[in-house]
Length: 143
Image (cartoon, rainbow, N blue to C red; front, side, top):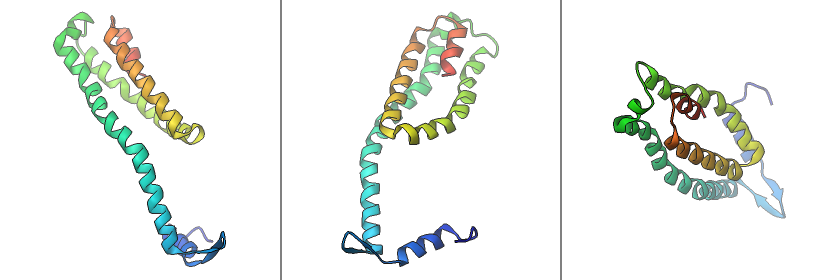
């Protein structure tokens, strides 16, 4: 195959070949049904967790603004740009860790990596409630 062939052409070549697998003919219709079943199985395993985690993510994002209104800015002496810096310090770490995290999903497995991420996120979010200084807030926000 040349490098100029598109993925569609490669898929068409694979599907057009009728192969003998396990004594039965494996054709395009069987491949489509198996792919559809696999996607449905993955959706049924992943989608409920994402639906549960999305509201928690929204709550987590709105927590720091609610805490500021409740008096966190006064308690932690967030004057000037300190509050904005505390909000923004999250993103460079997130961007830097995103690609290695996706690599680890393949190496460790989705089940274990997602469980670790959920537990770690919960622990960091819980610790944010016990912050007593600006430095602690920056440290937790950078995780």
